[in-house]
Image (cartoon, rainbow, N blue to C red; front, side):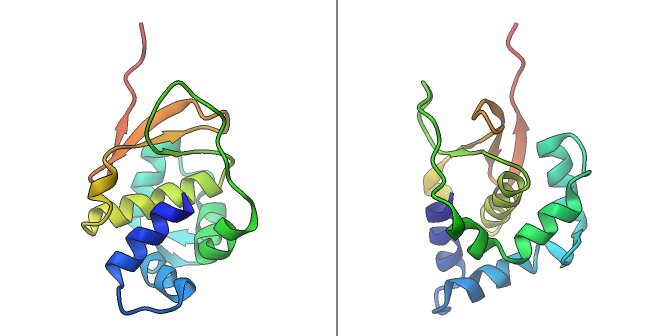
Length: 140
Protein backbone atom coordinates (compact mmCIF):
# COMPACT_ATOMS: atom_id res chain seq x y z
CA UNK A 1 0.00 0.00 0.00
CA UNK A 2 2.96 2.33 0.39
CA UNK A 3 3.09 3.34 -3.31
CA UNK A 4 -0.62 4.23 -3.35
CA UNK A 5 -0.34 6.18 -0.10
CA UNK A 6 2.79 7.92 -1.40
CA UNK A 7 1.07 9.01 -4.62
CA UNK A 8 -1.92 10.31 -2.68
CA UNK A 9 0.12 12.13 -0.05
CA UNK A 10 2.36 13.85 -2.57
CA UNK A 11 -0.65 14.83 -4.69
CA UNK A 12 -2.29 16.32 -1.60
CA UNK A 13 0.87 18.05 -0.37
CA UNK A 14 2.87 18.74 -3.57
CA UNK A 15 5.23 21.27 -1.98
CA UNK A 16 6.33 18.89 0.79
CA UNK A 17 9.77 17.44 0.04
CA UNK A 18 10.05 14.95 2.90
CA UNK A 19 7.66 11.95 2.74
CA UNK A 20 7.64 11.66 6.53
CA UNK A 21 6.48 15.26 6.95
CA UNK A 22 3.87 14.90 4.21
CA UNK A 23 2.47 11.80 5.95
CA UNK A 24 2.43 13.60 9.31
CA UNK A 25 0.22 16.31 7.79
CA UNK A 26 -2.30 13.70 6.68
CA UNK A 27 -2.11 11.76 9.94
CA UNK A 28 -3.09 14.91 11.88
CA UNK A 29 -6.51 14.57 10.25
CA UNK A 30 -6.82 11.04 11.66
CA UNK A 31 -5.43 11.13 15.20
CA UNK A 32 -5.92 13.26 18.30
CA UNK A 33 -2.69 11.93 19.80
CA UNK A 34 -0.58 8.75 19.74
CA UNK A 35 -3.37 6.70 21.34
CA UNK A 36 -6.65 8.26 20.15
CA UNK A 37 -8.27 8.51 16.74
CA UNK A 38 -10.39 11.43 15.56
CA UNK A 39 -14.13 10.67 15.70
CA UNK A 40 -14.50 10.11 11.93
CA UNK A 41 -11.45 7.81 11.84
CA UNK A 42 -12.87 5.86 14.78
CA UNK A 43 -16.14 5.36 12.87
CA UNK A 44 -14.19 4.18 9.82
CA UNK A 45 -12.22 1.74 12.01
CA UNK A 46 -15.47 0.27 13.32
CA UNK A 47 -16.74 -0.06 9.73
CA UNK A 48 -13.52 -1.84 8.76
CA UNK A 49 -13.04 -4.15 11.73
CA UNK A 50 -16.47 -4.30 13.41
CA UNK A 51 -15.16 -2.64 16.59
CA UNK A 52 -12.60 -0.13 17.78
CA UNK A 53 -10.77 -2.45 20.21
CA UNK A 54 -7.50 -1.83 18.36
CA UNK A 55 -7.83 1.98 18.30
CA UNK A 56 -4.80 2.56 20.51
CA UNK A 57 -2.58 0.31 18.35
CA UNK A 58 -3.84 1.83 15.10
CA UNK A 59 -3.28 5.38 16.38
CA UNK A 60 0.24 4.43 17.45
CA UNK A 61 1.04 2.94 14.02
CA UNK A 62 -0.40 6.02 12.30
CA UNK A 63 1.89 8.29 14.30
CA UNK A 64 4.84 6.69 12.51
CA UNK A 65 3.14 5.23 9.43
CA UNK A 66 5.86 6.09 6.92
CA UNK A 67 8.45 4.22 8.93
CA UNK A 68 6.07 1.30 9.51
CA UNK A 69 5.32 0.96 5.79
CA UNK A 70 9.06 0.98 5.07
CA UNK A 71 10.06 -1.80 7.49
CA UNK A 72 8.83 -4.89 5.72
CA UNK A 73 8.39 -5.79 2.11
CA UNK A 74 4.63 -6.09 2.07
CA UNK A 75 3.52 -8.58 -0.51
CA UNK A 76 0.22 -10.24 -0.95
CA UNK A 77 -0.40 -13.80 -2.01
CA UNK A 78 -1.68 -14.56 -5.47
CA UNK A 79 -5.43 -14.23 -5.68
CA UNK A 80 -7.97 -14.73 -8.41
CA UNK A 81 -9.05 -11.13 -8.00
CA UNK A 82 -7.58 -8.15 -9.78
CA UNK A 83 -7.12 -4.67 -8.36
CA UNK A 84 -5.49 -3.19 -5.30
CA UNK A 85 -5.73 -4.89 -1.92
CA UNK A 86 -5.15 -3.32 1.49
CA UNK A 87 -4.65 -6.25 3.82
CA UNK A 88 -2.27 -8.10 6.05
CA UNK A 89 -1.60 -7.98 9.74
CA UNK A 90 -3.30 -5.71 12.26
CA UNK A 91 -2.95 -2.89 13.16
CA UNK A 92 -0.98 -1.96 10.04
CA UNK A 93 -3.75 -2.95 7.63
CA UNK A 94 -6.29 -0.77 9.45
CA UNK A 95 -3.87 2.16 9.69
CA UNK A 96 -3.14 1.89 5.95
CA UNK A 97 -6.85 1.71 5.18
CA UNK A 98 -7.55 4.83 7.26
CA UNK A 99 -4.83 6.68 5.34
CA UNK A 100 -6.36 5.58 2.03
CA UNK A 101 -9.88 6.55 3.15
CA UNK A 102 -8.67 10.00 4.22
CA UNK A 103 -6.84 10.49 0.92
CA UNK A 104 -10.03 9.53 -0.93
CA UNK A 105 -12.03 12.00 1.19
CA UNK A 106 -9.49 14.68 0.30
CA UNK A 107 -10.06 14.03 -3.41
CA UNK A 108 -6.99 11.90 -4.09
CA UNK A 109 -6.62 8.37 -5.52
CA UNK A 110 -9.63 8.59 -7.87
CA UNK A 111 -7.58 6.86 -10.57
CA UNK A 112 -7.20 3.78 -8.38
CA UNK A 113 -10.92 3.05 -8.21
CA UNK A 114 -12.16 0.70 -5.53
CA UNK A 115 -9.51 -0.69 -3.18
CA UNK A 116 -10.26 -4.02 -1.51
CA UNK A 117 -9.84 -4.26 2.26
CA UNK A 118 -8.72 -7.76 3.22
CA UNK A 119 -7.85 -9.74 6.33
CA UNK A 120 -4.43 -11.28 7.04
CA UNK A 121 -5.18 -14.13 4.59
CA UNK A 122 -6.12 -11.50 1.97
CA UNK A 123 -9.76 -12.55 1.95
CA UNK A 124 -11.75 -9.45 0.98
CA UNK A 125 -13.84 -8.06 3.85
CA UNK A 126 -14.89 -4.66 2.46
CA UNK A 127 -14.21 -2.05 -0.19
CA UNK A 128 -12.68 1.42 0.16
CA UNK A 129 -14.40 3.76 -2.27
CA UNK A 130 -14.76 7.57 -2.32
CA UNK A 131 -13.70 7.76 1.33
CA UNK A 132 -16.31 5.26 2.49
CA UNK A 133 -16.21 1.65 3.65
CA UNK A 134 -18.58 -0.53 1.66
CA UNK A 135 -19.22 -3.86 3.32
CA UNK A 136 -18.75 -6.91 1.13
CA UNK A 137 -22.03 -8.63 0.44
CA UNK A 138 -22.29 -12.08 1.94
CA UNK A 139 -22.16 -14.96 -0.54
CA UNK A 140 -25.18 -17.27 -0.34
